[in-house]
Image: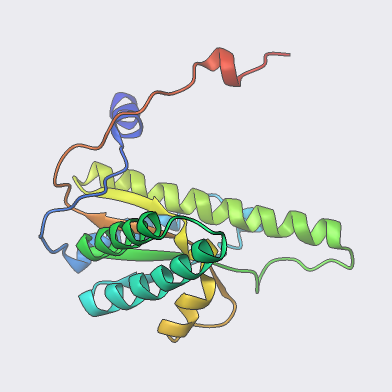
Length: 201
């Protein structure tokens, strides 16, 4: 059991190309249920998930975020060809996934303080909670033979989610998890040694 957990953790890769195979709703629900077992600040479970199975919905979101990408990078003075390539790569990647899950944060049930410092800490605790739940999704998906890729695009284009979909205003987009059957193995990237990231005191 312990060895299999290590295998899942060490074997997970970011997958950016998927096969054209549908994922059973029951399996997606099983994976989402794993998110609910993640630790969270005050056990408030501030994560919210928008699940996109419909190709039209995925395309609408991808294009809306893509237009934001073009607008902001053009304002930055980036090369138009590079911007277009980035746009096409992003839209294609999202459209190729079987399911796309928008990870959102809802602060409604989190504590509210009279000072900004503690409110900022409360917000960061909630962000951390959503991230840990997202990791549960990606690890269980890998264990079930699926591939995932976390995209940060919704952080840079939160209005797109609310423009395209009718979801509560309190749901703040944090990321996009692409889900599907891998078209190939993900690339193994080097990890820093413990000596680089750990200080024993």
